[in-house]
Structures are given as structure tokens and as C-alpha cells.
Image (tube, rainbow, N blue to C red; front, side, top):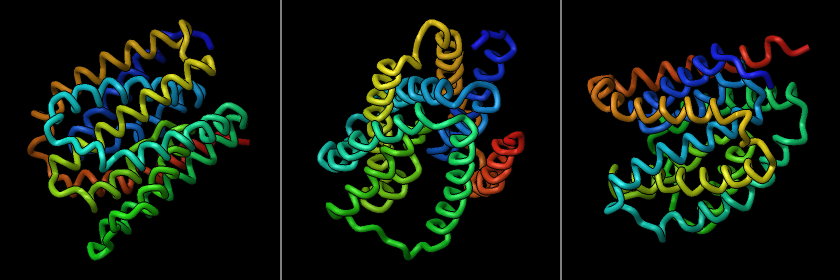
Length: 247
């Protein structure tokens, strides 16, 4: 991989915008970042960059919301998330780039349908059971290992079982933190995090820290429903961009 200043600016900009999205609707960083970064860098490096920046974002939020954490609530899903993260990373490291792009494109379309369905069917209620904790943890682990997309399944799970919004936010951010740390360690072991990719990691880290300071003020007045609808429209478009150059 040849380092280019233009690519560094693009990757940093993508991470800045993705972190602002996270601040506005409470999720979406990894979804947007992993939809756009592969247009610039190989998938495995994008996943590694995302893993580190997720940790940085989550540390800030966990410190702020530590009083609302419920470690007993998140133990099972996070444990099973870690069990299948290795499987996702194995697929990432052993499948061709073209296949990974197709898988990610399908995943983005699936997320669009998944979010639209769960938002529309307000009566859909997920109960706090051992089976649901395991299932959502396993699904999250696979998406974390492949694309470092931690949030979608856990977001739906915690929204249904947490007592209030602060509890939801604290628990999902702590889950991001643990999953991100574990994913980062695996990427180091696999050699995806090294001096070659370090400039992109540093640039992305600075971008998400700045977004953390700017995001709350900038997006406080936004209509979250409108932003969510924009995401629904944007995800399939990003999926098409990922596969349009595949032969």
C-alpha cells in the first residue's frame, strides 16, 4: 500500500463525518465509515482503522456515562460477540477483496431493511432472555470481525431491554469499547495495524476526537427521524458504489 496525502485526507474526512453521524443519532459510525473507506483503501485496513477509532469514541462516552453502566446486562452479548469476532476476521483475511465488497454491500442492504422494519413495527419487542442475548452477541461478533460494525444488532437489543436512554447509551458504548479493544488486538496479531497504516489511524483518531467536540452542538437541533431516513436512502447507494467496479 502506497501512502498518499490525498488518501489520508479522504480517510480522515470520512471518519470525521461518520463520528458526527454517531453524535446525531447515537449509532452509525462504523456503518458509514466501512461503506466509504473501502473506496479508498483495502477492506482489511479499513476494518483495522475503524477498530481503533471505535475505541477512542467509546472511551470518551464511557467516562461520561459510567454511572449508568449495567455490566450484568451486557456480559452475555459481549462474551458471545468476542467468540465469533475471530470467525468474522478469518473471513476478512482469507476472502478476496471482491467477495468482501459483495458481502458488505449485501450487509448494508440487509441493515436498511432491518432498521426500517424495527422502526416501523413499534410493537416488535425483544425480551431479555439468554437466547436473545446469545443470538445478538453472535451476530454482532461476525459483523465486528469482518467490518468492525458493532452497533446495529446490539442497538436494537439494548433499546428493548434498557430502562432509559442513558442506560442504553452507556451499555452500548461500553460494548463498543470491549468489542473494539478485542478487534484491535486481533488486527495487531494479524498484522493489519502496523507502521504502514499508522498515519491513517492517527489522522482518523484526530478526526473523531474533533467530531466529538463539534458533534453535540452541531447536531443537537437536527431532526433524528430525518437523519435516519437519509441513512436508509444512503446505505443502498453505498452498497452499489462498493460493487460497481467489480468484474
